[in-house]
Image (cartoon, rainbow, N blue to C red; front, side, top):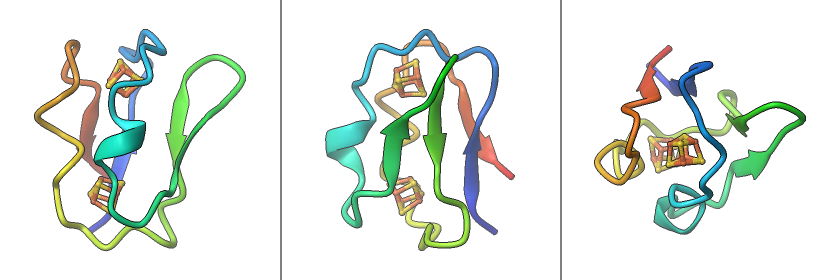
Length: 56
Ligand code: SF4
Ligand code: SF4
């Protein structure tokens, strides 16, 4: 199951460098995960100050 980013995202950018496969990018209103490429490692979840990164 891939992870996804909810509307709770405040676009702080902290999660980008946590992803080992580099598939978190800045979207129009929040950051987004390329869910098709997510390897479900969970490395990005702990750094998020708003707990916006959740299982899709
Ligand atoms: S779960 Fe892992 S692969 Fe998926 S977006 Fe988060 S850090 Fe990247
Ligand atoms: S760490 Fe959380 S709040 Fe910051 S950009 Fe990533 S998803 Fe958004």
